[in-house]
Length: 395
Image: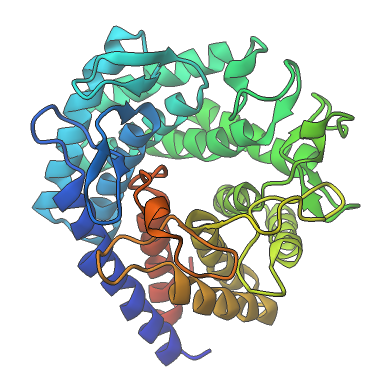
């Protein structure tokens, strides 16, 4: 691919983000009456669920702040971030910086603190918002949450799982995945070596405990020492998580100039793409078994792993310049853009059938569940790397 090709792709991603995706969320999801952002929304913008996800608030705060920081200083994006931050700060404070799983529309707690994933997204959002505004209140809230998370991590329990499904005492990749990048970005913002090291420690665990070179896969659950588990959870592979995790650690090890670790992450990305690709219909399977088999081949395909892989492949190419990265990227880009965009409404479909066809009308009325996060973040990040490739600029 040439600089001209990268430039054409950049225009596609920019248009997708600014002409379709962001306007949809600003029009349909901002709760002007009660604060925060809604997430149970149909493709046509109909609000189906008025309760709010704890995860979605931190995610959306991150995304609007990242738009302002990385794409352009638009007042409407910063105003949206202000709106969400004003909604969530009292919630965090009232819950001693342990963030609720779910909220009623007015911000009262529907489901109290559980998995520390919600805390991770709160730190992520507050960090990016502080980067945009310099808000000392946001920094203090992020640090207070960081301290509670570090303390809770010392006590085994279901709060250290993503799905509340694994036996107590096993180690969940999703926890190291989210907190590797969350701690790293908070540490970068503050210039805090201790917080940076905490993120680095999680990144090392991902590559040393969950990545299995002998199987060419990354596991979702292991024993505390990284050994494989002889329980059903120990057989589970989540390609989307694995790929997202690899670009997180590429960022971390790039910043620390650890070339060997970058190469390990790029290699793991390649394994995962090869294992999860549907050779019959195209697109990515959402789950694999330890032996590489697909437990439910006819299940619908989710949009978000495809987006994570688009960015991971572009970043990997920028870091290693190996042709396979672009070969996979072009294959994935073609399939993703052929099936997930919804030109009638703007926001992309969260799921398509295995063959890429649009689900039945009743399925399209189900609420969106991944909120204002994966897709816009993918588009923002792809725009950044494509711009650098156009300009032949170093990282």
